[in-house]
Amino acid sequence: MNFFKKIGLGNTVMLALCLVIILVAEYVFISVDELHGIFIGLWAPTLLGVLILVKLIDNGR
Image 1 (cartoon, rainbow, N blue to C red):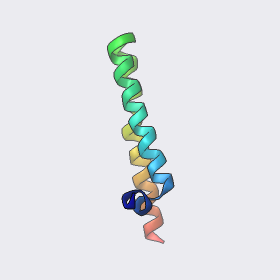
Image 2 (image 1 turned 90 degrees about the vertical axis):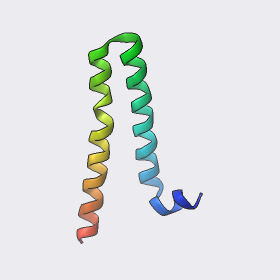
Image 3 (image 1 turned 180 degrees about the vertical axis):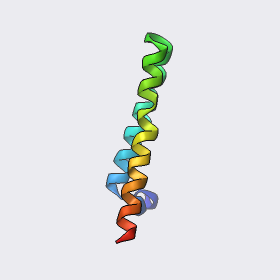
């Protein structure tokens, strides 16, 4: 519980969203279409990159 207080609510939500995106991408990759699964799977690292960028901008101030 201390971990979630340390990283904050917004970061926790973004990490949970990335986890959900990874799970959905795995399902789509296995069940529906491989290319769509790969496309959806690329959203998670993109969101994590945006999260890192926002943190760097906030720390620079």
